[in-house]
Each structure stands twice: as C-alpha cells, then as structure tokens.
Length: 349
Image 1 (cartoon, one colour):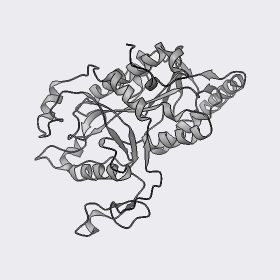
Image 2 (cartoon, helix red, strand yellow):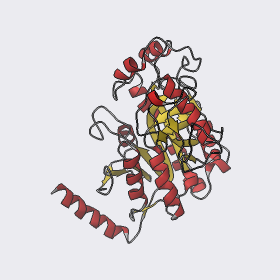
Image 3 (cartoon, one colour):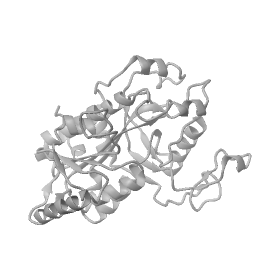
Image 4 (spheres, one colour):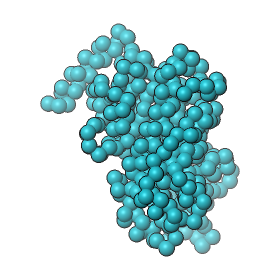
C-alpha cells in the first residue's frame, strides 16, 4: 500500500512538473541517516534537514529516500550507503523532470576516515580528486610475490602501479578553481574539539594528527569496502597518487563518492547538470589506522558507526563548513547563477 501511495504521489508530482520544473540552487548530498530525519541521533542528513529547514518532503520512490527541500532553493538527497545506491539515487534525481538542475551547485557532505599524516579528528577536507578504490584486480595478500607492496593491481595491468597507466575511469577531478574558492571561504570555520578527541590524537606521532581540527584541501578514496590499518593506508596513498598521475594526495576514505561522480558525469553529458559546480567535503570521524602499539584488529573492533571518537563533531563540521558555501551561493545567487564563484573574489560573508 505504501508503495502504491508513493507511486500515486509521484505521478501527481510528475504531472505538475511537466508544466514548470522547480529551479534548484544547491543540492546537498548526504549518504546515511541513523533513524528519522529529525529528532533522534543524527546521521549525515539530519542537521541539514533541521537547520536549513528542509521541511518540504517530496516523494522519491525511484531513489533511496524521500527528498527534502526548502523555500530558498536547497534540495537535500539521501543516497544510501555504497557506490551502487549513490549512483542510482543521483541518476534518478538528475533525470527527475520535477527539477531544473542545470544551474545547481552540488555539495556532497559526509563523514570519513582520515589519514593521520594529513589531518586530525574533526577536520574537514575539500577534495579536488575523487578516486575509485574498487576498480582493480586483487590477489590475496598471503599469495603476493615477496617484492610486491600490495595485492591490488590496476585493471588491465599485471603488477601493482604498472606503467603506463591505462585509465578506466578510476579518478574524477573536480573544478580546481571552485574547490579552492570553497576552501578559502571556509578555512577559518570554527570546528568542534573534545577531550576524547584530544586524548586519542595524542597517541599518534604525526604532527597533523596532533593538531586541533582544521579545514584543508585533500583528496578522497571511494571504496565500498570499509578498510582499516597502516598497510592499507599506504595502499590508499599509493593508489591515489597512481591514478591521479602524482597530482592527488589521499586524505579521506569514503564509500559513495565515485558513484555520485559517475552519475553526475553522465548527467552533465546529457545537459542535465553542470559538472563544474560539484564539491565534495569529507570530515574526519575516525583515523583510518590505529596508533602505534594497537593492532588493526583491535582498532577495527571498536570502529563502529555512531561510536567513532569524533562522530558528532564530524557531522557538525560537515554542516558548519558546508553551510557557509550554501549561504554564500544563496545570498549571491544573482551573481553565481550564471557565473561560477571561482571567477569572482570572495568578498561576501
């Protein structure tokens, strides 16, 4: 019955959409929610729903979760966890005739693991490169040759990091000027710190790991497998460097962003979205490896969603940092509707 009612409601929306599509200014993309959209322990969607007043619920049975929108032109989509759900949900949204997304800015905002060499718990990283960690050949680590660092092998290659590299769509580069604009706009955003975060980060020898939370630019590795440990951290760094031609620097590990980027790439080819208006923000809920003296097994056993040391601070960072970009776009829409903000000086607050 619920499916039937949802289909009826969607049909009614589609009928009205044929008259005039709703112009969208910003699409906020979140990946998971722990319960309801409001009023309980938050996931990535809840702060946006509550604080940006995404009160209009719009049926979306062809995607993972109903859409939400406010009167200012901000549309929120919850994709579901993993690259498959993200790709399907974003493609469904991009093809939905109810919305005009041709000038919309896209903000992916979610939590992630972080490389202690680059940042600390509660930090927020703007990615220029989104790299796929799933497209590969793999040999079990117990069977790799003694001279190999990893059992992961690029597609169509015979050994790790073999050159010349043959690109099969493993990396996506966002608009560098837009990423730099977002970073400059938000780099002084106050971020949450806590005694628990201070206690954990002091266990790491890396200087950046010991810092208070901060905003930075750093690239993300998207993999449907939740990996953990210092050896896989080394693989992530090497994999990102390889697939970006030494131009990318791995900082955060996520699960959905290559699915989102693939759909947006196809939608851009169809003239449905502007790929130059996409931003990916990942915030550090946990380190991607244990501190010295702790095994990967022990560390992974206490690495559970909702219980990460910086779970709530990372959610807060995603909203605080991302919200500054949303506000900037909305307040200066007459300027940014037809011209990318990277083309103008950051003068607005």
